Image (tube, helix red, strand yellow):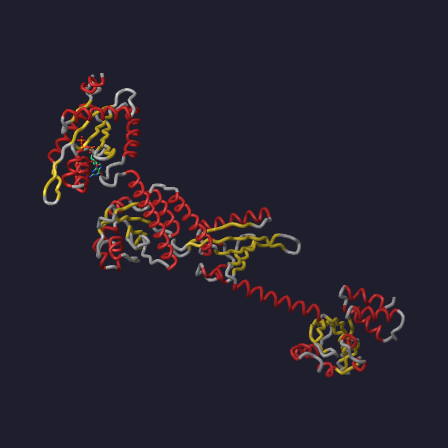
Length: 628
Ligand SMILES: Nc1nc2c(ncn2[C@@H]2O[C@H](COP(=O)(O)OP(=O)(O)OP(=O)(O)O)[C@@H](O)[C@H]2O)c(=O)[nH]1
């Protein structure tokens, strides 16, 4: 058999000795025919043979063609070759020569300088063969592997830079095996938990200091991935080192496969999205409150929603909104949905003053007051004990002011543990206080508008239009509950004379005095309206006729006894009253018209008196006679 013919296939399966022997035999024959073809085949595979005879110290080889060298290298001394070897590889190659023992096999990869002056990587596979006793020869094949070597170096470089990237990534990158034990985790994890990374390896998430509920959720997702091989995306919320520090992570869980497409591990990318989510949630919650304000929801409802918004942002905080009326030196509690009832009760009314409890002094000084720990504040000692019985330890209080810097309330957040706000938290509290101010101002504005639209400016009694609206409402209610309803129409006597004698301003003062007197004389549920000029009406719900007559008489008497201070003197006045009551299908207009007719009758009979319908007598007799 042609030794060359079997040499190549043998090389392919790594039968080194066969190859070496084949090549050796091939070397001894002139290159012609098949030999020439084999030589070409070896060259294109960048493959060559060599033989080192320690006795002669020469290397007989085909390697010179691989390195672009001339024929003088075909049988060159080992020393000459050493000069072409990369300095870093010199030691390994020299060692090869000194370790020759029969049967030994050597594999080595090293760099040789190419004729074109660059480093060529050669992979050498050689064996020591004993040809005669005491005489060994090293037979070997070598192959140019520069491309592979460079690719490998590039791969290592990339792997290193990838590792560096992963390690310095802001996101947590972790790998878990199929038993959900951690196999790798980057440095980012130590931003959240102090457990050293080494200690995390081989352990499950729950053993890394992550809260059990979070670990459970995470592992449930992992198991889902293991079952389905599908990547997962979800969010988890974890608090480390105290409940007040909350982190929200968006987790991406990816399956990792080996070359045979078997699932081998899970890669977890965890990005903290706390701030983004919090901002988003904050905006959403703010919008809810602002929408409520725009939709004129009752102030109490708006403030409760505002407290809930604050509590959802300032974790573990409990919020209270206090209001300050312009004419009073106290704050009253307007909303505190999460405070203990007893504590809320204590806050019902808080005095405003320099040394008062937190909100009281905040309102007094109109500045934010932060009590991070009640124990540390001597000024707070007075009320500290009272507060501490409810487990409160810290209190931050922010003034609520109008655009013109008028104080209209305070906003406070209470904590069960000592706590100082972060700049972000403080900024948020100011923002919340602005929203509270908008709600309060809007409410005041609404109330003012309503007041102006429904009241008579001079007397503060309801104006005619609103009085009639209220009368219709009361009328309906009386019909529904079958309850009595009576009406007084009141006219000040000879009012023109008062105007004429004392002036218009005096007339105004009398009108005001009467309205004040009427409010004091009537019940809180009675409705006083100014119908026009010096004519008023009082609607008396749940008042039967006889009682209405008494009220009318009481009012008349009070007016008669009244004296309006005017320019050092006193103006006296009297009034006349007509009384009607709701009977059957009467409308408000019917009642008004009848009371008016009774008033007219009274005026005709002399004024300063009351009269009205009685059982069996609905219209004034003289008027009836007159119209006949
Ligand atoms: N000062 C003042 N006077 C008013 C007001 N509205 C109406 N008046 C005056 O009230 C007077 C009502 O006069 P009259 O309708 O003649 O009635 P009177 O003088 O009270 O006489 P009797 O009702 O018949 O007792 C008029 O002079 C009006 O100008 C007001 O808001 N202020």
